[in-house]
Amino acid sequence: MTPAPATNDQFGDIKTATLTHLEQHGCGCYPYSDGSLLATLTATAGAATVIELGTALGYSAAWFASTGAHVHTVDRDADHQHLARKALTGHRVANRVTFHTGEGSACLPTLAHLGADIAFFDGYPPTIAIVTALAATLRPGGLLIAGNMTLGGQAGQIRTQLATWQHTDLGETLLAVKPR
Image (tube, rainbow, N blue to C red; front, side, top):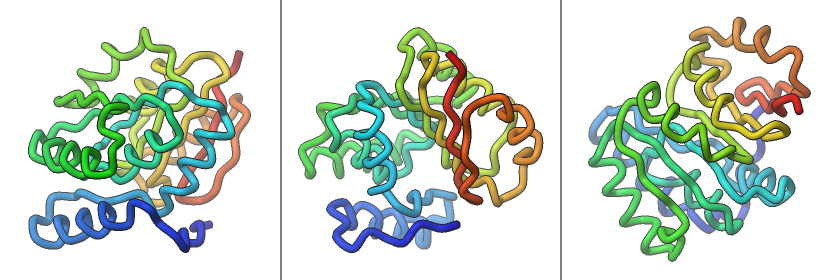
């Protein structure tokens, strides 16, 4: 199920810039389909800390930060993070975002001590290793938001791995609450 697009996307300019950047550079930089869903989940959870894997140009980070949460965003592309910082500064939410440059597999273990309320992934087809590393950053009762579940990768194995978690499968996006 793909959520309907937000009718008033306050960060639509970032989404448009991301899609333009993707078209011009072919770099795999995609915005999440519905940022307002991310903000709704963050606000509903009362999340203070979010860990995001895949900054792109900052679209989802902007939505997370707009709720007052502090976002730790990881991306291997320093140029993407530079563009994201610029966009988030323009929207006055950059002060709630910490950028980490590097591979997710190297950066995520350094963030595990944060005990995040939400961990988000939407970068490429999911792998068990990345979902496991993201899950390790969550506090018990934290919410894992795993996107791109329809792109293949190891989605089937991930669904099996998270079967004991309280979860809902929206097709492209899997929501799962880490057991307490």
